[in-house]
Image 1 (cartoon, rainbow, N blue to C red):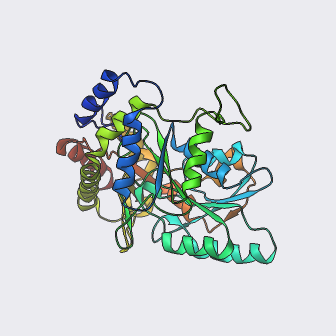
Image 2 (image 1 turned 90 degrees about the horizontal axis):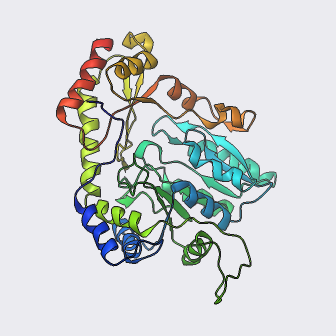
Image 3 (image 1 turned 180 degrees about the vertical axis):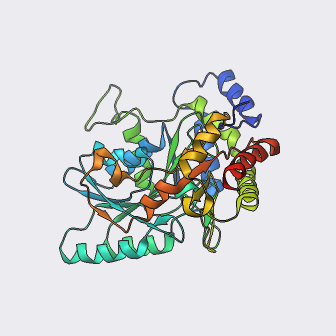
Length: 374
């Protein structure tokens, strides 16, 4: 049986919620399940925020950037090690990215480097329109420092929390509550899924109102179709929201299981040449994916050899995100760093981490890796 990196894990609650939507004939884009899903997320996050369910995390980022005023000629400062969907919306708006390296102590954006570059940019009157840090592999960024920097320089902060729903920062603050807005993803491989979907979470009520307006084709109030600006077909469907509503019931269980899987890997694989994504004391990551590094000089093998050996056994593993500044699309884009993210890409591997993995499957993955690393 193939072992997947992270596949959807249904709980049984979803079918009842979907059946309710069908029974009431709310199969069109909007409906009570959508409203309930947004309310459930707001209650879970436990903060004074507004939630807008959308068709994807990328759609949420696109809307957040547009509402923040990003447009042609602007710069957006962003984590280089991220998924492409976390950067493409910058291109949609005609803006340009400036990429930043990671802090090796957290694998999230290097706030000290960011602070220094903001000071230089302020002195030269070239501050970015927005900053978009990524909660990498389920680990929250340093929200306190980033929010302080954004306030000091008057720059919008939009946190890409697509991978971190269920994580916490500081004194229990939930990932997804940071900045002017945060982005969540419910893609099929995430902690919880709506089959595909995302959410914009914002402390600004007028941002949420504008996001809903733009996400439903920017239709002005009128008995006919009236448009004073352009919009998008970005709203999450009521049926998908019903799936998400069912998944919310098991969100904390899913996070707990992935952390258990990470702990099993760390206990069994710890040794010369094998490293794991760190977890600073002020954070609790979801461990969405267990991310390891393999030092060939000490481990006796390399990342790619391990990946291919697992693949030959029907086990899916994946290199860490290739940093965006290394991508052909962004060749020549400004980058600030010392190559922490480059080295992680060269040596890093994501192991199967789905919350539905059995103990036997975890043991199988561990056995194949230990056979190569000794």
